[in-house]
Image: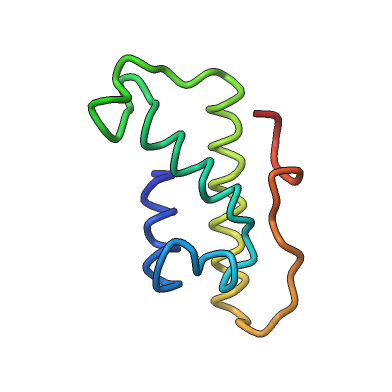
Length: 96
C-alpha cells in the first residue's frame, strides 16, 4: 500500500521529482520510502528481491507513519492547492 501511495503522488505531480514541489514532501522522504518498499518486505515484498529482506520493526513503523502523513498531505493539497504547508521532512517522521 505504501508504494501505491507513492505512485499515486507521483502520477498526481507528473513525476517523482515533482512530488516535493507539489506536495511539500522532502525528496529524502520520497527516496527512502521508494527504497524500502522496493528492496525489502519479506512475504509482503513488492519485488522478488525483497523476499529475503524483512522489514525491521523501526522500518515498518516508519513506513506506516509516513504513509499516513502522505495520505493526509495529499488530502490537504486536494482541498486547497494554494495553502501554505510546512514541508514533511525525515525529522518529522519516526525513528528509522
